[in-house]
Length: 257
Length: 64
Image 1 (tube, each protein chain N blue to C red):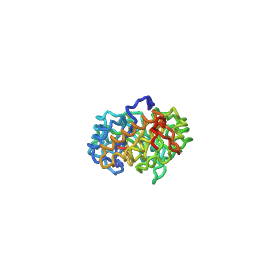
Image 2 (cartoon, rainbow over the protein chains, first blue to last red):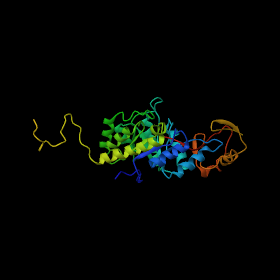
Image 3 (tube, helix red, strand yellow):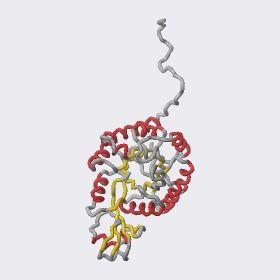
Image 4 (cartoon, each protein chain N blue to C red):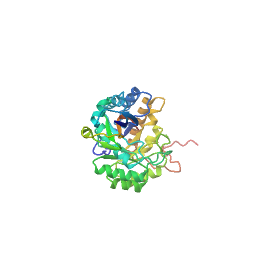
């Protein structure tokens, strides 16, 4: 069985973002067709038309777990305030904590991340930190109160897949009992499957589905991939080797030369 | 009084945060901050406004 996320057992290992879809109807269909059990959401300034209320209705009708983010926050103060607002609006203790440290790569500022994670954990939040694959940072985040780690596969929206499988594998080995999620950078189902084959507990992605030519089909493809990868990991895959090893038995082969 | 609401300068009659939301037509699921500090829903009525205050009103939105 998969690990729980702050006591919540998820129906499957796919966490899906809700941004950038061609239309709300396609977003909704992507969730329904794939069966993704977690939706990442955000907070933005409300306009006079009440666009946020329409979105809220649609997303709550999906019946999925909502994981609000602190996207775009660059300081501890900003992220903590955003988290408080998100807790009130979405009525959840879950927060995907993002502290952006670099404009081009959107790389997390891990120093501020650890500080914000400690403040929020002490305040009763259940923090899902968007982090790098750095083991020491992972250790500090756990000390700060996090019970989940979400290292990036590659920069957000880049679709490059797993840039550093060596480090992700090391992270899995270092934290065997901690739920680990590859968050960001996934472009293809094969990337998502690879993360699961490494033993990760879930994959969080958005752009790869939302910006695909057919987001609904891609959402289903991603679900197939994470489930295949999870099953493969549980099935204890063979080790790769350099030389061929015949799979068909030699014994009993007819003598024909 | 003059305040800044979601980045825009506004002239408003309301003297507290709850009154401001009503005056500007906000309802449903929104969260508020005053001068970059979170103000919980239950404290909005008691939160008086002063000239030049910066108010943010946010709502659920798509995110990754």
